[in-house]
Length: 193
Ligand SMILES: C[S@@+](CC[C@H](N)C(=O)[O-])C[C@H]1O[C@@H](n2cnc3c(N)ncnc32)[C@H](O)[C@@H]1O
Image 1: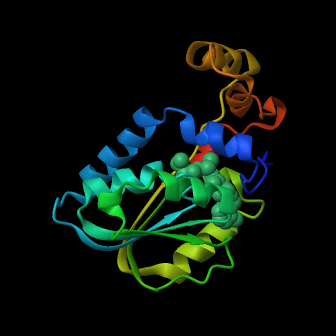
Image 2: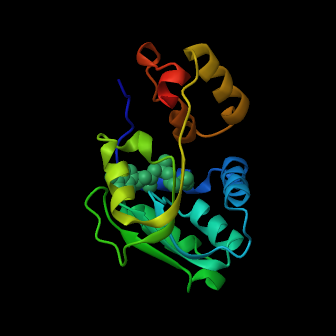
């Protein structure tokens, strides 16, 4: 049984708080893992970022792989407007933001060389939307990289994490950590399976 967050992040205060949050550690780590997996600094081609939000991972990817053009998709216009404001001038030619809601996407091309997504899956009421999109848009031999959240083991553990990492944050950011129902959590081996 899954516990979902609201699907699209459209509320202005939520978009602003998310865009201002410091995700440098997990997002930087995601890119490092990708670099190690791809193992080719000259890797080039078309990349697709699903559920790109304000574009922090998008921009990090484009910087790490200067031979790639990135199409970055989100269903929330408010998120994409924020991403546009944060887009560095030097990357304007290589990052294209597209509004679209999985699974009903109409993207500028097919056959992407790499598709990545961070923290989208737990928003999707029907997770098959993600897998259908991968099947539709991945080119032959495409790389796929997905990252999402891991549920804490107990409410106490969640509260401790919240206090450690968001103790002084405004309420709207602390709320990210509280949208959790502990009674229906899955053991990690079941998630992996
Ligand atoms: C938690 S944010 C992650 C943003 C970004 N990937 C990051 O790591 O910072 C999830 C994003 O997915 C978007 N989203 C949720 N459901 C979607 C759908 N069905 N199609 C497209 N975007 C969706 C939300 O609007 C939100 O911007």
